[in-house]
Amino acid sequence: MKARHWASAGGGTTIAFVAIVVACAVAGGARFIGSAAIPVSGLAAVLTAMALCVTAACAPRFGTGAAIGAAFGLVPSVLSGTTWALSLPLATTHMRCGTADVGLPLLAAVAIFVGCVVAFPVSAMVNLAAPRLDRALSALAFAAVAAATVVVALGAASLRRPQPDDFGKLYDERLELDGGKTLTVAGVTYEYRTAGAEPNTCTLHISDAAGTRDEPLYAPGGACPALDVVRGPSLPAAVVRHGESVGETGVFALAGDGDVTVTGLRGRLGAPRGWVLCGALGLGFAALALGLGLHARRRVKVVRAAVEARHTGGGWVEVDGASRHVAALEHAPPGPVTVQLGAPRPATYRTGAAPDVLLVASAARADAIDTARAHVATWALVSVSVIAFTCAPLCAARLFGLL
Image (cartoon, rainbow, N blue to C red; front, side, top):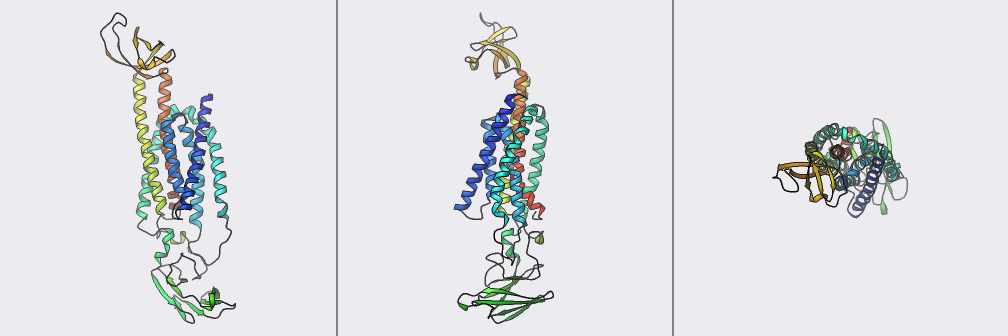
């Protein structure tokens, strides 16, 4: 394997790592300044996609390494983060403090670094084989864009349903429960006792088929908070503070023993809006990369139709026994070049009858063809990579029944 393949792979994966780190920092800062509604992973993926397209356009020799590095670095982190988020209960009566998700940013940083390191040798091997894989990678890119179109369309259709953060909208029935009163809902009896076992507490006594239990409620100043019992179709009844929705501040009690989860509401919730927007933007960038790949494919045809000539120095090129001047080569060193022949010109005392010459590449024809095909492969890899890490959240949503 040539040193230039390793150099291109190393430069590309380094660019990918830096782009991901910067994108994550910007996304995290945007959430800190803005609100919790900003999806950090989705915004980081979109910013990385932009950086990837700019890299492939401005520095094509690093495009393959950047594409593979971005995919290896981001996809595991995005998938694990979104899967973790969807596995958390939407509503629970059990206090969760110090959970393992506080370590996710550190794990994500390690996963991004390891992914980019693993991508280094893979990128070098792909760089070596890219000129021979351009057609296969282009076909893969078309298939990825087609699949992403379907996934994004399903995500857009799911927006008609509440997203997980708004699952409380599924609770469409509300019954007030005042202190000292008793209420029976769907076979469950709620007795709101104004005197608790501890000072400044009240007690919610719950009786159902499974038995009885007491839920203590904090009552500042001895005033028991007003409560509501809310329920919806095929949902466990929940007790919340009066006027609030399930999931806003906390649930005091849930009918039954289980929590409200995304999988338990399969088919009734839609994908988060930020995830759908991330997938749509990623699809746009991938389509752009695919279009640039088609343009690069036309470049391959131009190079194939060209001929190899010899640059003798000073911009003079020998073609078919005649010498023609090419201004673009005036300061280039002598050596093989690839040129395109135009319409013949009348003979002169110096050049003889020879066609116009248009420079195609300052390299031998075989090398120019390999370079052009490598550019096609690079844009195909960029398209596939962008699809992979921007649509990963929607794929996780599909696994949890949100699409």
